Image (tube, rainbow, N blue to C red; front, side, top):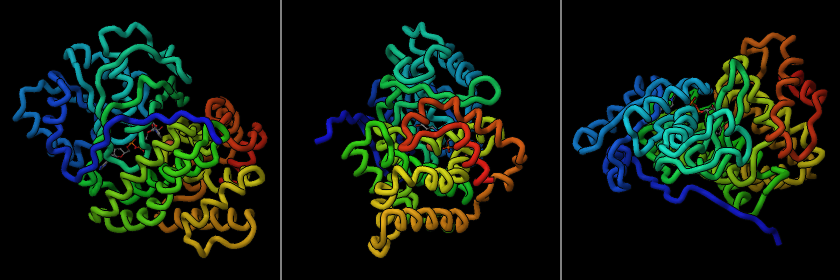
Length: 387
Ligand SMILES: NC(=O)c1ccc[n+]([C@@H]2O[C@H](COP(=O)([O-])OP(=O)(O)OC[C@H]3O[C@@H](n4cnc5c(N)ncnc54)[C@H](O)[C@@H]3O)[C@@H](O)[C@H]2O)c1
Ligand SMILES: [Fe+2]
């Protein structure tokens, strides 16, 4: 018997086109002054135009904060918070990828009239406290699952990514509208989809808090992701594939919110912090090499995932053979998406790997979840293999 606690976002609305009635949903929740946290790319893709009519027809006051950047900084979080305070916002909507949703989470907490805690005191697990404004998340990428996680990732200073992890950040409502994701460019679909796959794989092999519910969700996420990612990359307008991807990213988010991610993310963060490589691509670049490193401790778990991804035909051979087949399948899938597969193809100099390894060791929150202990020498070897 496994003792465990499982938490998630209390309401999930899964409906193509539902974002068109976003204002009504906010009003039903008692909102009067809403802040929408988003980025220029979302606006450029015409997504704001889908929701503005519903706000114009409502009595709601709407403030749009559109200055979120990829891998958002603490400065951006505070700028959004100031704007929310000035507008007396009483309801926060994250509208975008993980970057916009993560900023929205922190704005909901920091802009609450009772919040006295500075952002700098919130990093780490369980350090952010208090009450926050109501929070609804609308993902426009099928990737981070931030709509169902109690996690916000912030770039602090110039290059370091740090996480705020606290139950107070768990969003109230997740609204999945697949129509918002049909315009995602193929490389963003690929990178964000692989991020979701990594969430599922790392949740399934997490050394901490892995449990029967997170396992169930991780497996179903991987089944959906492996059968829909290439369809969505090739035909962005396939609404069924887009919907499956969004649901899968949500399942993977629910899994890793309760069975946290590990060394793939720890080694991916310095790539985002220093070289602005998109989060999903950073994960994808180190994934096969971390899996090979983890295999001596996690092959029995990877072996259970091989048939989920490749079908029953993959259910032959030893755990090590199934693990090797799974890694090869993942590498081939990345090639099929057209994403780069090596650090050298992403503008990274070879002499940067030592710095990357030293930076990755700072991600103690994540490394502690890994099935196999990672030393700095191990991290260096993994980056070298990925180079
Ligand atoms: N909170 C969590 O649990 C969690 C988990 C994993 C990652 N993250 C964080 O999330 C961030 C990454 O989020 P992401 O991968 O979703 O990317 P993102 O939010 O940074 O967006 C990437 C790009 O895609 C564009 N975009 C988004 N949706 C679009 C759409 N529908 N059409 C056209 N363009 C669109 C954006 O404008 C942006 O330029 C990182 O900061 C990462 O650390 C958070
Ligand atoms: Fe991630």
